[in-house]
Image (tube, rainbow, N blue to C red):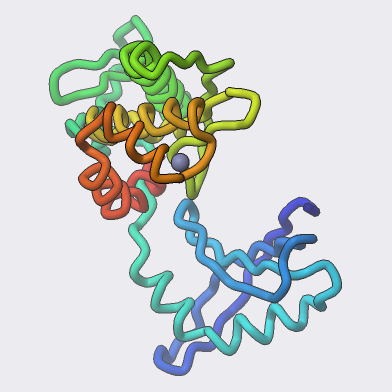
Length: 239
Ligand SMILES: [Zn+2]
């Protein structure tokens, strides 16, 4: 796949009088059979996928044809919430207010109801992100052993990613990957995703055998899937 290129395009939807500026990312794909559009839940960019031989013009035509749909989707998207003092970040689904304490030392401290970030303000977003990734790692690593033991599996490695569409994945070589954003979800949702990927080490498919195995480890499948569907877009817009 050729790396993404971005540009800003002014859409002219019929239902909305003003033009709507939108970020378009062009994605050339050898696997794509036709031109398609989707909205990135992470940053609200419109991703236009083009088969190798399709002209960019075809992508623009599709974009203009669906300008109403794109404008409506963009209007409905959650506003981004960058890490800043006063912003609330859920950790294990418990809201914590980011407090900047420039005079204090000790890095980033998780306290009841608050996340205290020391040091200069310019480092605060990065420090909050680092803290959440580390906390995600701690929580995911803590969730693995009981399921791994019961399923008699051992992941080759566990990685944290910032994925947009998948909360977890299992590679054929036994490496599991998880979105660090799961740290913001309730503990039982994180536990479900961990159990799901560990069960793939036994069954690398979504067969009835896989689901039966997974259900032997967690009663939360339906509730966790529904929770992620309802809240996933919000988690993707934080930070
Ligand atoms: Zn799966």
